[in-house]
Length: 169
Ligand SMILES: [Zn+2]
Image (cartoon, rainbow, N blue to C red):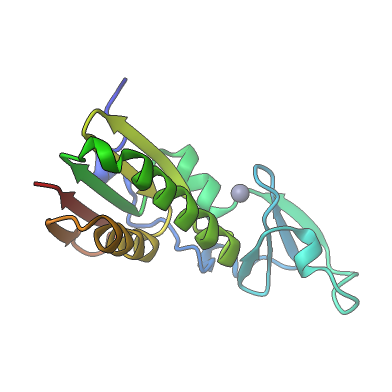
């Protein structure tokens, strides 16, 4: 297995944020070919039914790929949490915390996604499409599982990548 997430330089500084600057020049509604998320008026939502209303029923609809799907496709991430020395007794809890948190994050914002939970024994690597999501998730993990040590490192500008390490004793 190649080290998929070890090369943060792959994260292009030009990459647009999920707020959708890249799409702000688009006229009408954009639908993601991959996940069905829809973009309208500077906002990505979960699907066309969330944007369509009587006022925009005549807006043209075009197809593209949303920033979250593009990031995943390009093997990029914006948040990465490395868990070290995870005690066996916490494995199931951690999985539940990550899945539950990510589900809620996605429900709130269609661009906030869990990319992968990569498990290598007691060391896990969790990647997300959004840095603040990773920060909040890390905080939640620390609170819930009483991890002893953690540190956060933001990659230097212009990168948006948040790298968080949570270590258990
Ligand atoms: Zn998509």
